[in-house]
Image (cartoon, rainbow, N blue to C red; front, side, top):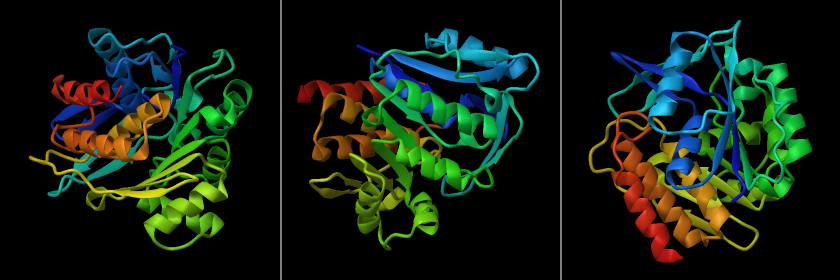
Length: 297
């Protein structure tokens, strides 16, 4: 299989009393890797304590690190995360870190199966130009999966529009849909907004998630509402959107219909909410997902 290329931040999430490897692109790449897909994560970390911790973790979980660049001058990205009583996170993201200086000019990949990219890595002029140029050179539009993953104040309207214009599949939250509507107009409501987003940017698939209210998936042929899956024991919602994105990407790659991939994505996101942080510490959630996929093929 051709690799899935994932471009974006690889960082350390600093929770009160704990810290974990994170970054939305890494979370998605890790899930896809655990699902059995060949993945190349292109990111940049510092030559520092956090960077070495990341490399040790990647080696421990046998995640390929050949696309992870080492920056001798800038620190590894960090995020201070606080979680409220409902499990909702707040992020304080450090600026001017290694992934802001990612160099994609040396990353030539022939015919990737898919390219996944977000917008945080595009918050600087370097990141914006690097991502836009790389996608134009190496990945046709039909193979680009965009997860906006907007984190104020690290938001650029030009990056939002340009990235959506290069996408075939876009996944965003209802709050992020409101940001896009503020830039380009569009109707109120999640279902109408998802259909509008699909048409406005020529997407093959638009995905809008809305937490406990579920998600809407819109293609040219249908718009489908997917109810949220129940969470047995809520730990936090960190990484739930990344889990939904990973399973959605898997569904696109395997040609699954919406009425299958939507509930699978919702169930996997709910399972991640039952874990502390975005990366599960056990194999159980992947085993359950694997059963669903194997049963469909």
